[in-house]
Image (tube, rainbow, N blue to C red; front, side):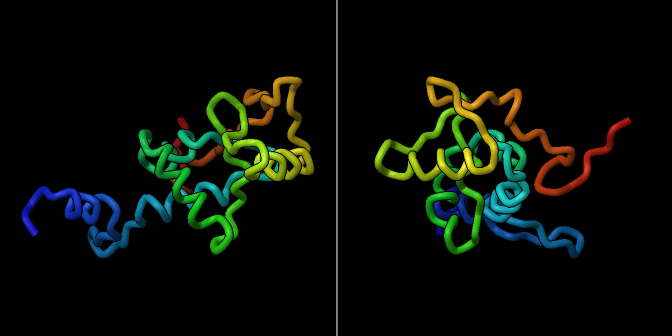
Length: 136
């Protein structure tokens, strides 16, 4: 495989590598860990999850992770919504289920089916995927 190919770059960017004997998690694993940390009654955007997992431009990857891994990894997929505070799934294709699950957790939608992110948005006290931020 020649250096710089898209296949090699993907392997390089998402592989689990060793650094000083410490195994680093892939973006996918960090994103899953981040999603699992969203508490009941709170929501996060796809972009927020991506940024907390170490890839600020990885919102579309988060969509793919939720689509492919929610059931098998028991991810609270319903707590991830758009940055506009809206459910991204179309009506009839999961929209109603996601809204019902969020409402069961106490999340309130306005007349435009939008969530107030100032009230219900998740603001973790930890940094990227579980690492404590040092606050001085």
